[in-house]
Image 1: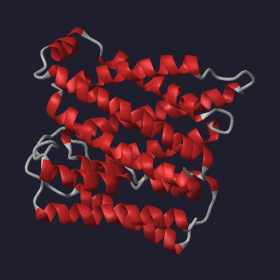
Image 2: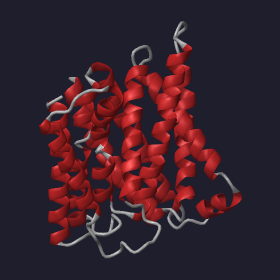
Image 3: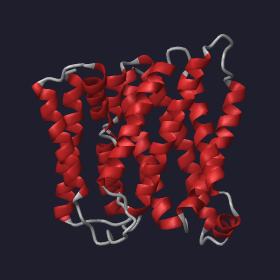
Length: 300
């Protein structure tokens, strides 16, 4: 498998994970923290086991370990915003905006590193932002919750993912992708468990309807999730960060395809299904975002 094939495979796997996350947070679990607690426990377990199997080799610079932990902290913040967004917004409107992250990599290089952007790249940025605004304007029957995150919060998650990718690439210069995986799982797991563990949340989980079925679905998702994460880190370790980031950012197209299939085969699985007009707008906006991201990276 090449790094490009691995990045696309990761995008497809993580699209499935995002859809199941959306279903679990919006349909199954009584509160967001009730979802984060078992999720955090699973990833904390992954971290403890993987750290024993893949210990950090002797001689690694402490600064590199610090960068890896920083990357994990930033990614945890992005994942928190992403999962919270899935509770109140449809997955096919959240994922395209969050995965505009390669645009921020280009902008950071321009403003912080003095790199120049071509007219094509600036035009592509305008297209991506326009697509993000368009897909955020797509309305559906149940978009009435005042807590639903706006465009600015989704773009913040995108920025955090971009910074995390850049710092992760730097850490991969000395660490392996398995090291980055268990460090990230440990940081996220610890944060989610500490932030969610209290009596009220435990009672909510105990009293859940169809609890066993929901936890089994979560377990399936958390088998798929590490596969997608590790494969993406493998691709990042073997390929250029810009192109790997671009291919991984094709996840919105996979999400839209899988969501469309589910809307026909399993109505009600997701938060809500829009009509034909909403579908066309999502397709146009998603295509704009992915095409813009690809144009930015191919021309860099």
